[in-house]
Amino acid sequence: NMELKKILIFIIIFFVSAQANAELIKPNKKLDPYDVVKIQLEALKNNDSQDKGIRQTWLFAHPDNKRVTGPFDRFRIMIYGEQYKYLINHSSHKIKLITNSPNTYVYRIEILSENKKLFIYEWHVQKGSDDNCKKCWFTSAVSIPFDQGNTI
Image (cartoon, rainbow, N blue to C red; front, side, top):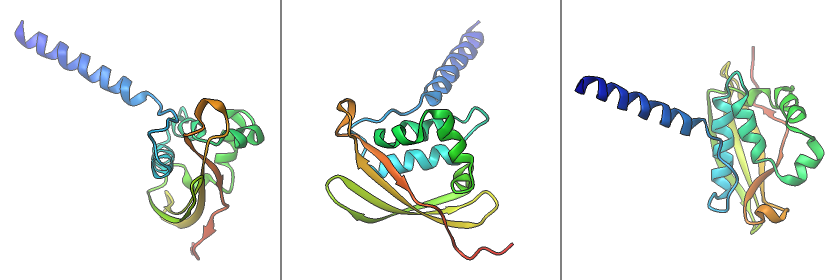
């Protein structure tokens, strides 16, 4: 009977923690610009069949950008497109601050793609523009990738 209780407690803990991990991180003023980039890159690195990684990334797209990219489904198609597909399920990434001002941070992102090719992106993070989260940081621009002379 005691063994059964232990198993039951383990199962409950397992499902509670799995549920917690399934929750997407929402923009908030406690996250700094680096955190925002790291959250997005980790999400894209671990994208799943439901595109949770892309959905997580979408949450941190700057509100001004969302007006341009349109709804999530259009954003998703853009991420799977030629410019950003290397971010999906990439092997590793490095984040290096290039420049910053009070409202904008620019990072150099090295991506080692799933098939071990190196790509460099420039990632811009800015403070929010809408009343919901003016002190929150969001990604406002990601450059096209610079191919680092990969050979096939």
